[in-house]
Image 1 (cartoon, rainbow, N blue to C red):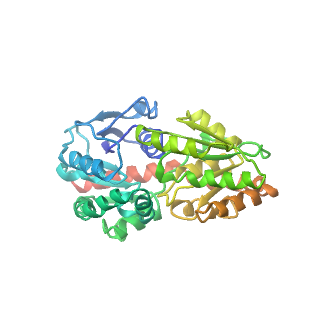
Image 2: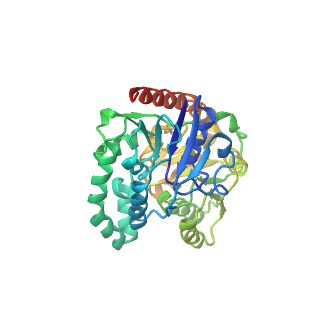
Image 3: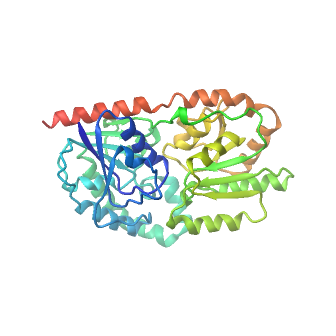
Length: 382
């Protein structure tokens, strides 16, 4: 059978793009991908091997502040997908994708990475208010109307997947769908791509994943600063994709890291990132309230324990005290945990359990379930 995927942006090497790359690679069906912003040179090269990516016009901005988001939502709502013979549509959504249903009446399934975070996630809203009172005021003004339109689109889905229980909870809190209608389906990790590194590794902390303000990388810098002030100078590598809108944030991080043992590696290749996973002592996962988070799984697949903020998705993947730790988002708490972890053999003992935990999150079950549901909703519209 032939199905279509819609996602507003296909332009990064992130967990989101990895999700539908793995779906198209492993599915028993044929897929075509539609988007309103495609940059093939900055996303996964192999994506084009498994799906044709078609950019719809006009192109939308990737800016995630509220005014550009409202403009993008309006553009998506006006769009009409080509009549290409697809028997159903999978909407990959992190807040705006559902607006493609405004002119689409065929079978549709949502895979929700997150509802719009600046509107529905309390931690992100509070961070935005601290960052900019004016932007927060605009959010308060435009948010109710956006939410009303959002809920109207969500009623049209035949089936809804959420990538975690955290995301499912946000869907319910936003009144987008009744919780009974939402199925949690965890993304996976390609175990064969990751190799467990040596048990004994020189001390090195790693922050991996997209470099953007929502990831709260300042927490890692302040952790390293505290440790250095106490005579424990541990190198930190910050490695991840950086798009144009996040370059000012990267510049702020570089300035804040002056004098600290911190190295920034923007836009690493897959091989470079996998080598960092294998050789680092501990992954710091600092996002304020992550929806799911593939990065902890990738680190654990490499035998690298994870120290994560005790909120959101990491609670569903990191087993505290077994494959890493969950701590409040405070530099003092993180620094104390790093010091304790390095003081004995805890990290070495965690390497095998970390790998075993990652092996519980394979792609095959994910892809098979999506394939099954797409067939079911297509048959239901016959």
